[in-house]
Amino acid sequence: MNLLYANDRQGRYPPSYYAATATPLAGFAPLAGAARADVCVVGGGYTGLSAALHLAQKGFDVVLLEAHRVGFGASGRNGGQVGSGQRLEQDELERMMGREQARRLWDLAEEAKALLRGLIDTHAMPVTYRPGVAHACWHDREVAHTHAIAEKLARDYDYPLVEPLDRAGIRALIGSDVYKGGAIDRGAGHIHPLNYAIGLAQAAAAAGVRLHENSAVTRIDHGPMPVVHTAAGQIRADHVILACNGYLGGLEPQVAARVMPINNFIIATEPLGDRARDILAEPVAVADTKFVVNYWRLSDDNRLLFGGGESYGYRFPADIAKTVLKPMLQVYPQLGGTRIDHAWGGTLAITMNRLPCFTRTHANVLSASGYSGHGVAMATLAGKVLAEAVAGQAERFDLLAHLPQSRFPGGPALRWPLLVLAMTWYAMRDRLGL
Image: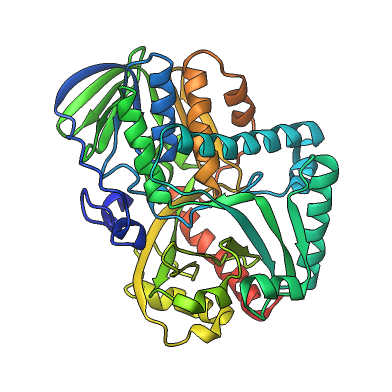
């Protein structure tokens, strides 16, 4: 199944709250005929757009190919959360690779947040960055761990911006009785994700990048000078960057073996008006400790944007709103009967250990993907790191490329059924409160 077309219409942003409120962006012409470039970037999400922008600023001639529209994939459909650190907590990273390497990964993640904010400001993007991401815990043991991590970050990582919250504190902040406690990270934040992708595209175009939409890559002929093919043209380049994430398909099997696409879903309620302050006392984003994570925030017009819900299969469920309403009403039963104005799905990508997958698949082909739901800032930094590597400064790329990455068991035929079994098991544990 080709996920580029399994759930979406060719060349159109899927209907969503983000698409309905996006800054208008004129389309970029499809690739037609043969062309030459220093670098060909495949994929117009955060990774590809950031790589193209940073390469152009270094003086490279860059072509970017996007199968649909820039920001079409996870970059334009996600929860908009700009989180701190990596997808794994620092204590787990320390156990996995030691304190020094864990610290380097933390510092990269801090740079990623600063880079995102700096790009928004420097390029006057149509994006408002709002600070604050809360972490809501279902169980007392999770509260204790969350508070311990806050203490560790302040003590060992010079990061005193995570405020522990007891049950009363989390209740006052998020207006729900179901959580036992948590924390709020004042150094994290949230954005309109599609407008950020559009802002990156506008900045890249202004820097001289040649962007082509509706230009799906069909194959790559590898060699000293790779040739990247679409249905209507080809690019001969010195370097290729693969920035396809969950939409990589069969372009590069060694990446696909370690990076698996999965779907996630979000709904947007009608504007809540004065009720919004009872849902979130501050304009922060929230994520909880479910295995199938619930995450939410308020839009600028006071809609609740709520993500979550279980769905097993590469095709989106027929009724996305129904899929997400169940967990939303578990958290906010007071919203029963609230109209749902938007419901959409998207395809992201995960790795076995939830750390991003950086790899050099050929001497002149680089790839970064698999951000595992933590990619808004990290994918932006990944693009900058890829640009550095193409320019001959590969130290940071090599650090990330040496992160341990396992293949998903079962190969292409069995990895998805095995993941479904695992997700079913953990989802059952969520429902049983284990």
